[in-house]
Image 1 (cartoon, each protein chain N blue to C red):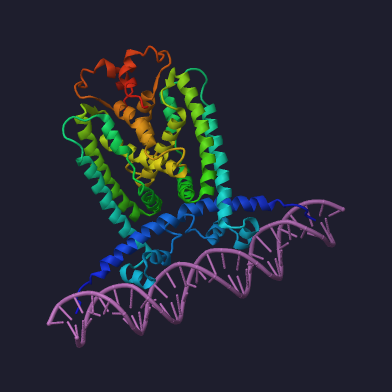
Image 2 (cartoon, chains in turn cyan, purple, yellow, red):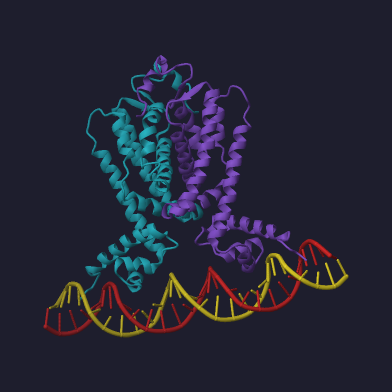
Length: 222
Length: 222
DNA sequence: TGTATCCGATACGTCGATGTATCCGTTCGG
DNA sequence: CCGAACGGATACATCGACGTATCGGATACA
C-alpha cells in the first residue's frame, strides 16, 4: 500500500507545468484561468488543487524550473566553446542566438518582471535569478575577451546588465514586429563594435595606451 | 437646456484617465478592476460606463494620450538644444534622462507590449507609435551627430531601435532593483562609447579612412 | 429662473472563476 | 491478488466583477 507519492504524481505535475507555460504565454498570467491550464494538461481542477495551492504557486514552480534550465543552457554554451584563442565574432554569435521557444518564456518572464516591480518579495526572487545569470555571463565574457586578447575598460557587471537589457528590449521589439526586427538582430549589428569600444587590447596597459585606442580611451566613462 | 456635452464631462473623463493610469500601474491592467479606477477618480461605475464602453477602450484612450505626450516631450527636448556645435555628452545626457513619473508609464506600456505580442491589432497600434518615436529620435540623432562632427556607420533606424531597447531593458532592471541600477545608468555608461563606435568623424570619408578609425572600421557590421 | 437635456449614482441580475468537500478509480507493498 | 493509502474527478457553495436599467441631481440655454 502506497506510503509516499506514487509514480503518476510527478507526471501530472510536469503536465500541469507544461500546460501552464502554454496558457500563460497565450493569455497572460492573470487572464489565464486554472481551468484553462488543466484543460490543456488533460486534467480537471481537482488534479490542480491536489498539486498546487494556487495559481501563484504554480507560477513560481514554473519560474524555478525555467531558471535552472536557462542557467544550465548558458553555462553549457559557454563551456561548449573551443579552448584556445577565439574571435569576438564567435562570442557575438552565442549572444545573438535566440531559440523559437524563447517567445513563450519571454512573455511569461516579462510579466513576472512587471509583477516583481510591484512586489518586493517577487523582486527578490527575480533579482536572485538575474544575479546568477549575470554572474555566469560575466565570467564567460571576461574569459572570452581574455582569449580574444582583450580586456574590459568598464565593470563587467554593468556590461552584463547592458547585454541583458539589449536582449530583453530587443526581443520586445522583435516579437511585436517580427518582420521588421528578427530576434538577435540588434546583437548581431551592435555587439561587436560595442564590445570593441568597451575593451582594449590586452597588450596595451593603462600606463602606456596604444595610439590606436587613444581616441576611445578619452571617451571612457567615469 | 444642454444640447451637446456639458463642461463636467471632459473633467470626468480626465479624472478617470488619470485614475486609470494609477490603478493600472499599481495592480496591472487585468488585475485592476473598473471599480478601483472609479474609486480613485471619485466616481462610481455608472460614470465609467457613461464615458467608456469597456476597460479596453479606457486603456486605448490612455495609451493615445500618453503617445502624444511622449512624442511632444521628445521633440521638445530635441528642439531645446542650442544651435551650433554640440558634444556627444550632451546628447547622452538627454537620452539618459528619466523622470520619476516614467515608472507608472513603464508598467502600463510594457503590459501593453505584452498584449501587442499576442494581438495583431494591438501590435499595429503599438508599432505605429514606436515608429513615430524612432523617427523623431533618428532625426535628432543624425542632426546631433552632424553637429558634433560625426557621421553614422550603421543604419540610423536600427540604432534608434537599439537605444529604445537599452532604455526599456534598462528600466526593467532599474525598477526591479532600484538600489543596484539607477534609471539611466546604462545610458550614461555606454552610450558615449557606443555612439562613438558606430560613427566616424565627418572629415574622414569612407574612401580615405582616418588611421584612428582604422581598427574600428574593420569591425563594422555587414 | 425655469425647464429640457445631460450625466453620474444607485440597484439589480448575471456569469464565470475560485476553493473545498467528498467520492471513486489507481497504485503498489505485502 | 488483496487492501490500504494515494490522487484525480465530481459536485457544490461562494464571491466578486461586469453590464444594464432606471432614477435624480446638475447643467445651460431661453
